[in-house]
Length: 203
Image 1: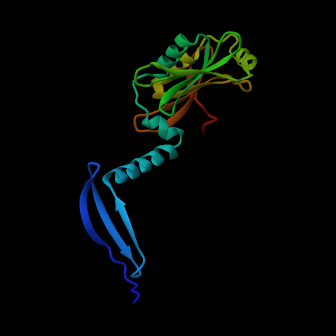
Image 2: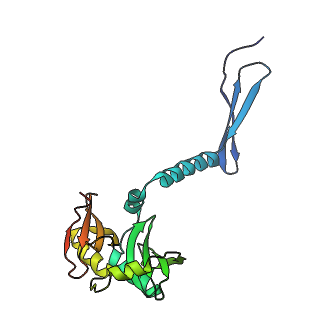
Image 3: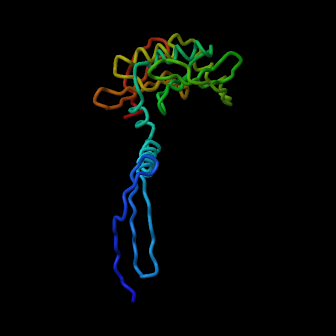
């Protein structure tokens, strides 16, 4: 005789590998049943998976907001240049670390990763970029470095990125800051005066 009833019975509680096991018996027919055993470790694994999914789904702004602080953009640039001498062209707090792009002697590009809580070099890699000539042309006659621009923009908030804008006639540094309330603002920093103005392109 077939029964269309689902019976869930807690049949046993035992210690399995240091955790608690719960046995569930689920049946729809007399002759067809399925037994599922779950342990505390399984539950913990599922919780970790959900946490990993949340971490992986965030955008750059979320990653920057979650990153530990302490090391400023200017300090990250200084640390990167000490490791890889050259000209810093950009610095961004991304995926839990500062990433500083350096144009080294000979026109080779390098990305240096800096820990935002200690200032230590986490790693460096050579990049295949071919715009060294354009960058050098944009910086010709400039007296304000990326580090200087980061320091100047810091008066407006916490700097989370600084980058060289070498397009068009209005060349200069672009800096992004975050206020204590979380609001973000982009600024333009001059290549010769370090003057900080609102980036109207952001508007």
